[in-house]
Length: 415
Ligand code: UDX
Image: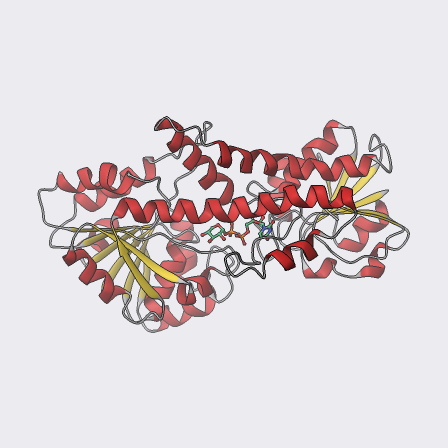
């Protein structure tokens, strides 16, 4: 089928290359000429395992074209995916401006029947109450589906091609039929519902994963004071068939562009509907305090003022260069407020952190330099290259990621 994907971020580009890998003909539409040129030259603007290979194959087969030309791409497509950003506002609610702009563009180019697919993460009610009225203005017949993504950064391609399920929130049978054709060569089970339920599945899914992490961290904070290993506790808990072990790794807390944003958006939506949202507010509260525990533990061993404190890792998790809502940022701010000098290294995220802190922190060339030049080391991101016990000899180490070290003085955040 002919498909247009509007937005070439990690959801849009992943959608485009994966759809092309199944034989669909895909237009990847964006407003950034730089991104368009990079994609058409076979270089993905974002690092995702397997993305470049699929992109190159799609370009070679003439199944993918990146373009600024939304109008003609939409006109030549049977299905249009909206994969634009929905950034958080100050109050935690999401900004729908890009969704509305994309919907208007589609509505103005419905030269024949098409199914519009909202894949961006939008709060429950958005597809039916915001996108649908924009399409109705066209007075044309169209299909509408809310198809949430469950992509983890670093494994987005694998998650798209082999994820646990495909959720289709459709307005009618015709939309469902078309969407089943779109996904006919994907192995996942297809779950069909209405658009608002599909939106809530996404938010409930991410909020429960985030809640699991805050739960593990709250229990971990108690385990540390009891001198027991929260990882062993969660191994035992995870054997209960009603629960499951994943996303119960206690540590420095969750970051990234999704969990914090999605939980806050659901809280905001709930409060708009006059619900107190007590539990999810606590999930956020536990998570915001967790990184600061690293500094509290450090202060048990030295006064950070005028000392060089080393940070190993800046990205919100291994396998990505993304520092959005990363615990490292909260820790850097806290250390700078205590007049410490920060020296940091991350295999991928240095340029992103440099943009935020400029010369307020020292960026080291490698992990050895951080360890050598610092009075104490904080392990922030679970990169495999930090898992070298002898690296930490004779050092004070505060570990947020359960990494084995032979440090002289070692404190784990929850163990
Ligand atoms: C998440 C969801 O997993 C994905 O389904 C959704 O589509 C987007 O948001 P992502 O944010 O990319 O994906 O990363 P994820 O691997 O889920 O980790 C999120 C954060 O939780 C990271 O900071 C990670 O370090 C942390 N985490 C994860 C824990 O602290 N403990 C865990 O057990 C698992």
